[in-house]
Image (cartoon, rainbow, N blue to C red; front, top):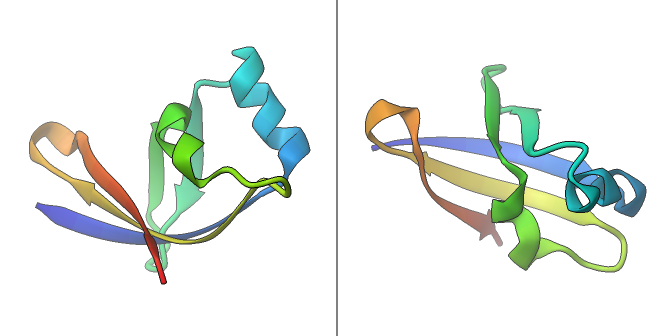
Length: 73
């Protein structure tokens, strides 16, 4: 299983696009510059009043399928 570290700063206004269905995936760069794309719904547990901010570890399994996402503290 591979792991990627991404820093996210998604404001509330942008999150509304995901909830309204006009965007279904998030595109981000990991700390090594690789572009990652993953389903937006996996970020729901991390939403606060100001959006989503923080560092996250994405674990990717066979077929580049997202296995897990965790906030790094």
